[in-house]
Each structure stands twice: as structure tokens, then as C-alpha cells.
Image 1: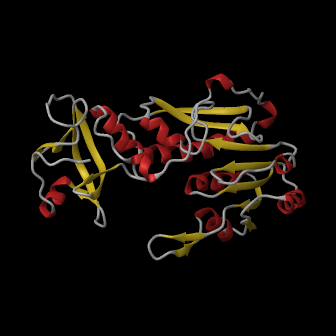
Image 2: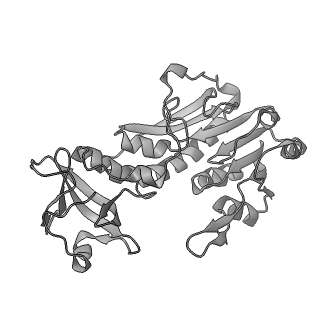
Image 3: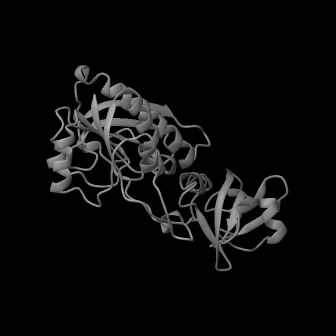
Length: 306
């Protein structure tokens, strides 16, 4: 099968690698390189780098308009495959391939349409997640379902670990879909059951210590490793990277440090229960265990995270 692949983030890379080994990837569309990190040096995207290394033509339009539609018609793909691309694809392009355009989305649609379904699954305490391959239309993540693959979340699943599992599952799901397109009956999504997980910002990851301890725990795991759940201490930002909740009573304000347990961690009061911080990172410092953190920044009972 002759394909155009559209993808940008590292989430898309396993799918490109898998499909290029099974089909003819005639072209790759990806977002343009952009400056990254403190030095603002331009970093080549992983999808672009892999495609270039393997001799696949790469195109990086900032928007998909008539010129790109003409290019796609010239390439004449049987199907367009989209994974974590980041640009809206107009109907003029979606209608070009005889087999249409398919997308691998990191949730069980119609639940968690949008750009942050992986975070949402952990934040909301879901027991299962997965990948849905669906036929693209002009609405966000609303096309007919072609294939769904589910997995069970681990008890201590983080957004980062789930993201890695689902990007590999996406490659598997797309491979199965493309290899059995003639046998699949598309299934319309149930619009009444649709929920959304829209783009997250750094401020979304601010911990609310008024939440119960399991809720704080889901925040820490749901925003790991980006943007990172955070709080403040004496006006300085502190990322909370690891810990565990406990059903223990207290009578102090949420966010208050109750004690520093040498084995369990920094014990912090929540709206209900407590959360033991085991790994954290002060702004402009490296991530470290609570024991290493306390060597350079001693904490006392009664201090409070806000």
C-alpha cells in the first residue's frame, strides 16, 4: 500500500517505523523544526530525522492549504496515516486517497477526544486505556472507528509510562488496520458519550493540596513527566515527581508538612489523608530523592506547600 504519513512527536515514531517496513511510505509530513531548551538551538524533529535517514521525502508546511493538497494528489497515496501530527487537515486532502485518512488516537473513543488523552486517563483514575484507529473527518477525533485495542493500567501508572505503551500499541493497531481494511466495517462513534481532554498548560499541573491524598497522587502521576506536578515553598517552585498516598488522619491545613519520615518521605497533609513525597525538584535544580533534597534544603514540621 502506498502511504503518506503525517506525524510530529516521538509518539508517532514507532508507527512510522512499523509501517515503513510493511508498506511504501511515499512521503512524510511533519511540523517544522523549532528552537528548544535554554539555548534555543533548532532541534530536528525525530520523525523528520528518521524519514530523512531512510530516504523518505519530508515536507514541513506550517499550514495545509491548496498547494499541499496538490502535492498530495501528485503523490497519489492509497491512504494517509496520521499520528500525533498537530495540524488541522482539510477535507480537500482527506478526500484524496481512495482508502481515506486514518488516525491513531491514544484513548478509547469517543472518550477523551483532544490533545491530552493520556494525562486524562491517569488523572481520572481510569482502569483501562488504549488506542483507537478511526477514519478522519473535519471534526476533531469524531470519525468512524476502524479498530480499538485496550490495555489495563498498572496501579502506579504514570502519564509517561502510559504514553510509551500507547505509542507502541498505536503502531500495532495501525498495522492491523491497514492489513485488513477490506474486512473492516466502520463503526460510528456515539456522540452522546464523547468527552474531551484538551491541551494542558503548566499551570494546570499546580497541586491542590485540598484534594484528598489519592487525588494528589493522581496529579503527580498524571502530569509526570510533563509538565510536572508542582507546588510552591516560600515562593519557589517545587516539582513533585514521586510519592504515595496514605489514609492517615491529621488536623492541620492542607499542604502543611507534618514530619519527615526517614523511610517513607516528606509527609504532607491533604484535604483528606496524607501524601508522602519521595522525589522532588526545586526550581533550577536537578531531580532528587527526598533524602538528597533535605541535605541541601532542610524542611521542618509546620512549613507549608502552597
